[in-house]
Length: 419
Ligand SMILES: NC(=O)C1=CN([C@@H]2O[C@H](COP(=O)(O)OP(=O)(O)OC[C@H]3O[C@@H](n4cnc5c(N)ncnc54)[C@H](OP(=O)(O)O)[C@@H]3O)[C@@H](O)[C@H]2O)C=CC1
Ligand SMILES: O=C(O)CCC(=O)C(=O)O
Image (cartoon, rainbow, N blue to C red; front, side):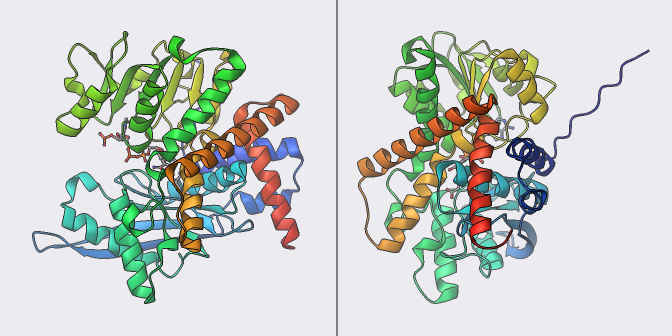
């Protein structure tokens, strides 16, 4: 008789609820606290018209989810992508709460998304979509309520337009409403590199435990945007050997190590696939390469029950949000693969966003060195607290990270008299 294999649930909202249940059970959290944390406090669905260059009008749809504001205002990026769904945005907002909790930032989680493909929009259309979305959500965001930032396919320029739209609507210059802005309008030095830099700090901490040196270590990176591309640069500067990278069009592999400045030049002028002498690989193949460190830095659900047993990396540093499913986590744990979870590995971005917001509120700006030092302290402390708790409870780093966060949010909810 043929064995029926249950199909894995890839809905990110249900995945994050499962992750909460796992950590909450270990902590014996009261069920009413868990029930609050398993759903966002508020989700706004919007549609807004945008005049296209050809004179037509297109209606765009988007979402903003605010998960939990017990600790402080909600915070998290805005994604422009054709596959955005409300459940994805809800999940991303929940991961933001737990990410802020891991680092101890005074924020809850938020996230936004617009269903669109920015590659198909002209610069003018992109600006009108950005301004249209900010106008649609302006009533629920603000420097003291919910502070957006960049995420997939959104940029500092888009943050600048959104800040301008919000400031015009409110009749007051409000740089603190959004982070990841250009430096000229209150952006923070170091924010652009922060997600990758934070991820690198967690990798260095993880390797420290192993005694392994960068020069002996190979890396494959999926996604070559803000997180992936800058991680490749920073790791190269530290002496790591980047043997494979990819973007939405596919990947390249070169066992002797890729010349990362050359890859960057190709990315800017043609495609990374033109790299001379490299073997073309698919995004699926990249995940299964025999490397020391795998960095998923693109989208969710790339390491699942279907391929986790073929992953050969020793460490996975999740620069992306939600790249690994719970079933894959179990398989990786069994194989002894160390997963530095998204809510820890990519927390550098929101950490420097927090620094940007603080600088905006103070009207006083820090040097890049100050920002990077504060980021290093925050990331190293976060990694060590998570590793310590994980060791104490004999759980993986993801569960340890959730436990730290759940406790912090629960404590805030108690202090406010919600539970
Ligand atoms: N930006 C930030 O501050 C933070 C980002 N993150 C997370 O990091 C991840 C990447 O975000 P970010 O770097 O900002 O986004 P970017 O838009 O800067 O880059 C996304 C990259 O992913 C690639 N990509 C898109 N689809 C696929 C695919 N199906 N397979 C492989 N690669 C693909 C894109 O390819 P192409 O270049 O061809 O379009 C691009 O190189 C996301 O999960 C995001 O949520 C987490 C914390 C903070
Ligand atoms: O910088 C921020 O506020 C949030 C970045 C983000 O969206 C994320 O960490 O996933």
